[in-house]
Length: 348
Image 1: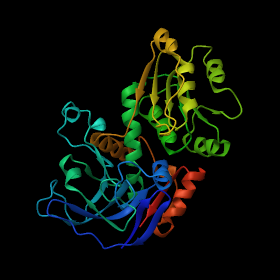
Image 2: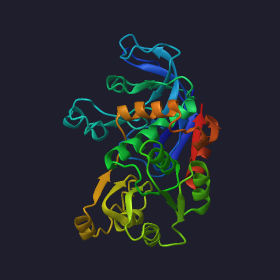
Image 3: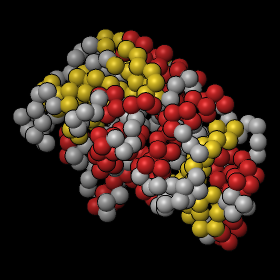
């Protein structure tokens, strides 16, 4: 079968590999959709410390069960339509026992320690089944939509922490697919008031705004974002700020524009070689700001994402603006890198 294999930074190959066979405690799926994200581009360019062998990439996966091991958990049957979690908690450590599976200290990941979904077939490992991480796709939800449940789950995790309240003034930095999902969740689930989407790429900002309809947009390449948010709020600042972009300056701007008792989500991770920011600690102190990290998701967030998609409460179909065959997977990465689509999905 065809699979996209990571060998080293800058050395990623679409090649023929043996079709896998499910072990007694595993499930094999035919991949129908594996969507792309900025992390895939970063792995292609720079690698990742958790990828220590030749590995099939891809972690936003939906497909159809074609083989079930005799000892596999979950009662799955051939023909079931399923979606796969990406971050795999152990279910046993202190964090997992506390219900903090998104920060499991023993976390492994699809496309890292396990072969991923940029392939015609893949094995769902026993570790995923153990934590109830293989989900039935609800009726009426397409494979492409289900593959978007993974980033959707990550956004749910972040917004769960910051507690958006009805009527809140919310600023979202980053007009990529995650920023689009944050806008929709803030409005559709939490009933936020004014939602402002910020980016420095005018074309991407317009493309995403046309899809998710924030109340306002700010082109950060043209105006001072902090001054503009303060002007829009009569000097009070934003109740909630989400930095869905790997840019140091947005985290600094988030603190500067936050209102008293404001909540900030540092959603986008910063470059490993430049992970620090200048933080005015007095702003945090005197305004009683709440700064939250957000890293991945827990299995329950995936189930919630699929339910929101199925109900129509949070649509994602229209955010998937490019569909490419597996043969063009590297072109999909380039489209993501250039910011030419909201969400790109690969269909083996």
